[in-house]
Image: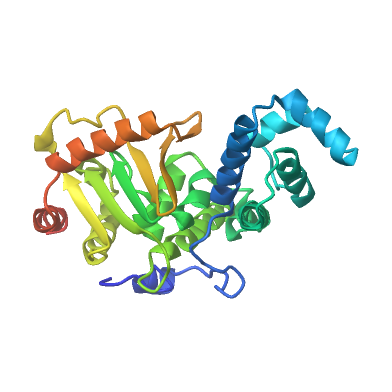
Length: 307
């Protein structure tokens, strides 16, 4: 495809699965998990600026409103371990921290309301983890370094099914729900979507692992989606032991906040927020990018896999 449309798998014809309409599952450049993460950080910074311990916060909350906010609750909030922020709790904490400026308070409340929204992927909680999916819509740019598997945002349906089957999942209904969720996720990259720019550095070894019966379709997809704000560069075997050989990662940049890095293993998903960690991954990305082929050379390499 030269452009990704509202249905990212249109060229696949009869293989296309039915997906919920965008009227039912709106794709906007917002991210409730990101808003919740920002709110947690801002509340922690506000408590620290007020020079209060969690126990002191609880004591002050009791004085102001007779409401208890335990130290453990405050810890969960500041670690972003709460599920849906309660507006009354957020507003009480603002009172405790002495935040009286109306515009400043409105920003906290706005983030709390955004964090409470139910996102489309919540309908797929039974089959997917939403850590990365929840952060992607709010990013201004996503940079992937993928070593063995083509990233989900670039997969065809057939390749997605192969990856899911490779993970040992055999239930047909579960497979189709996972495929459906992944195709919905890709809509943030549509040319009319208010989504992020996307740059991917793809190790050549990932191309060799594509099953032969679906290789042409998947590789052709990688060629056709190239455009100024969506590019795929191949990291050739000749790069040898490159800077990211220890593992792939995803860097998410945000227009109004510091960046994050997402890493994943068989055992866990992790979001790296510390500035030092983000800078370290950013440096590795720079090194790997320098070793990757240019766009034209990358397209030529991709074409060699289907010629």
